[in-house]
Length: 225
Image (spheres, helix red, strand yellow):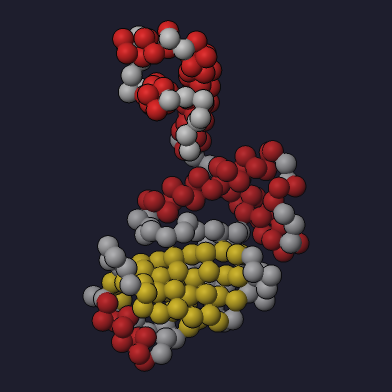
């Protein structure tokens, strides 16, 4: 969207200053600004705002870096996970918890993300783990793909599980998709033929609440020997 106050040349000057392509002391820029005091003031305000945003962004990056360097206490993680499970069972929203818990959840989320990265997790949506670390099968190397299963949780009552299986490739192809209320699923013969022919797969299970809210998501990679 263009600003009708400025000509195309003046808009190019603003864009170049904000992107760092040119500086205020550039001869062409200085000449354009000298001929238009209103434009010079606009550039000054925009550059000042951009500097504030850069400063805030750098501060945020430092804070995230410090959080990433933390080694969470397992007892603190267990306490936070237990609280999240309680919140899920009582159907309360997280935003009412307050700043202290929000910080704890942030650290927990970062820790889980680091663990997923260390495990070489595939693409797709990040895992959402509310109070449980689910074990998925198949995972790793297997002789043949047959049944897909995941560890259950006492809060799973009423959940509908969605399972998506894709080929593990640069351009993945969906091989099977289904929904079930049990923590296990055996694909049809046609689906198993496609899955075993692919050889290498990545798959995920998503737990859905009756009201359509996502309760958790977990994924795994597997391949035939």
